[in-house]
Length: 99
Image (cartoon, rainbow, N blue to C red; front, top):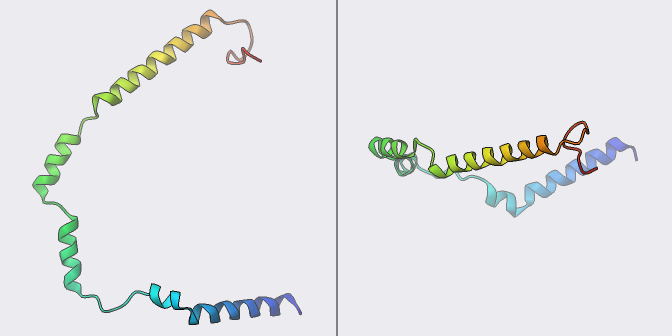
């Protein structure tokens, strides 16, 4: 058999299996939903404007923990840089000390 016949046969069998499979029917979206339900669910999702503005006012600044993390990172970077300058042994680039 040529490769086109094999390809067409596999496509047809796949289509047949998907058509008669109960999983496909259960996964299909049913059309009996009402438009009124979508408005009710939209009310549940969105918060009032006053609550949203209060939330954003409280959360606008980063926590102090973030700035402490940045400070610690900067200190460790400076320490490593000073160590590299002090212990520089002529290798280029400087981070290949231990090879």
